[in-house]
Length: 180
Image (cartoon, rainbow, N blue to C red; front, side):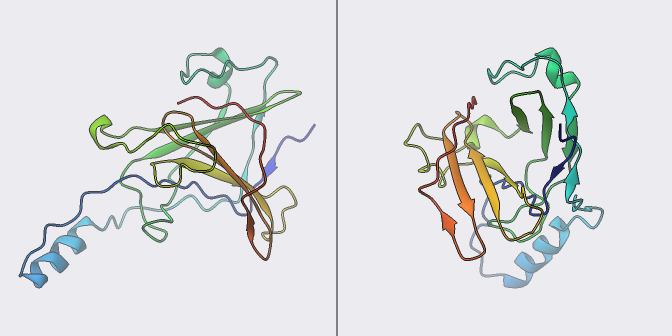
């Protein structure tokens, strides 16, 4: 059994809506406001390996984290936003829990945002990228050139892609269970 997931291209995609600055004629004030928002204490999680814990029974996938299996999962946090920002602290702190059993890999994302600002729609698979979503890239070969991308929006709509050195394959569909 594999006890580590090599995730050389680990990226948690957090695309939460952020409040836009009001238009103002005072551009210097905007620049000062932006400087104040920079978190100099922020140190992103750039460790390419997350050790997942082996659990002895399946976890119930229901959008709740009260199943006993989640208590034994590995927790990782302090991720970066890659869109619309570029390697910046996301507006919402995000944690991922990861575990596996003899048959499945389990991921849970905790991203608490103001419910009034969450963008999420019930739509077809792979059509949720205009919503808020979280996701992970799993580099199973450890080559930083190919990966499986798994995404989910706040109500459980799935998106997945296969990343190769030359493109992203949107026709690729994994079979996985998700719940928001």
